[in-house]
Image (tube, rainbow, N blue to C red; front, side, top):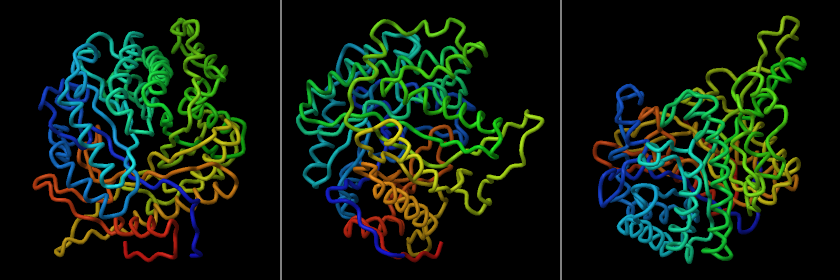
Length: 458
């Protein structure tokens, strides 16, 4: 493989999320979150586990920072737990919670690691959920106040902020499909939630700009690019509808285009918006479209859409890769979709800067008798996707950073501990960390700011 080099000042990093790694779920004044309640409800988590301990990062963060420093990782994206800082969601601030994140940020900076802070990665305080959660407009206001509290404390040192991680998951996955907390299956509620989350983003941007002058502010969306299975009109419309459901419903209002008309019409026809866009109040769309400095891009796989109800559909011409080219999650490995997505975001939406806030894969490799974790499949996945990123940059797409998901194996939401996305293996019984082959590979890639021909035995 010919060596490829990334731009100067390209920010390499790794990502985590509070509930997935911190543990200490009821220590030092932390309140209950919707994920605490959800995980403790029988039948909700695949392996019956919880995030009560997870990776015990709350107590072991110095070790985890030391691992990043030893690997030469320049950036760390993490989230703060709302109920750890404001246990009831609004009102009394828990100073011990703020102190933890102050120590973490100071430790990162002392290690030469740039913090990228995500305010919301799904752990809504349960007390707010008891009042309606994100279906209540007041939750958007509470989030803006939370953003104010955190940025007043950390804004002098944190210069990269993400308001929300994956609003699609907060709204549709959690309130329409019901796979994530709070586990609802209610279309109108899900679409109301989506609006209030976007509104809270816009409200928070103003607070962050005030309290962290000069900082960069963005939001992270997840993408599931849709490919029509054939050139037929039926498959094309199926793919476009999926894009509308998964990404355009969020991208369009964020970039000043309002909610996509085709999806509004579809949702009304299907009865998913029985009162239309009644939840949109005057000024909301302007608030949602607040100027941001970057868009966080989370990408893992694509979707091939087939309209099986169309009797005269054309033969399928686009096929998913064979099972051998799927991750342990069952997700197809398809870096070409990543390349096309990055181009589309910049050239269609004129996004001024993109940061890859999540990209990675789950494989269930374990330590051998010598403690080595040979995860060559992960190395191949990451390498191929970074080649796609580099191709996009060559086209003029302003990708400014890449944060691999994840630093360490962790609690994978409704799947519990059945999946492993980390470049660091975690033994959940002993909490011992093992650096996988991919961790050393990533260390070397960062050191040379580029890719060379690689070998793997996975």
